[in-house]
Image 1 (tube, helix red, strand yellow):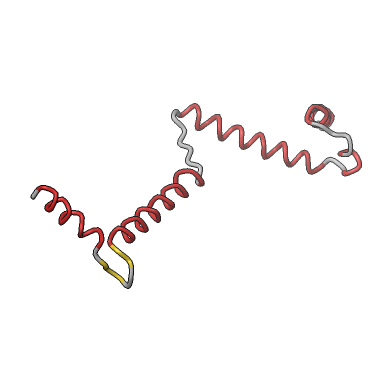
Image 2 (spheres, rainbow, N blue to C red; image 1 turned 180 degrees about the vertical axis):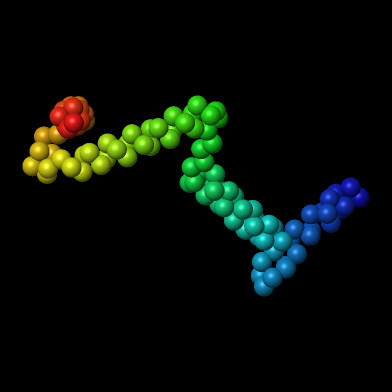
Length: 101
């Protein structure tokens, strides 16, 4: 009798719902789509929440410095960029900074 009730309890998974799809097909498809959406949201989109006020201010300061650095790099002639690396670019920008009064 116990085996018969287990069998009847599991039969609802095998009942046909839409076309030839069974209940467990629908459940698996919904869970798969939900998992895919969760992976896309959690892994593909980078969420970054700064923890402190100092970190927020430091991030803002870094962005401002990077913006100014990019502007200065745009002013360097293409012919001078052939053998340029980060150290040379920093030295070049420092020289321009101190040369311009």
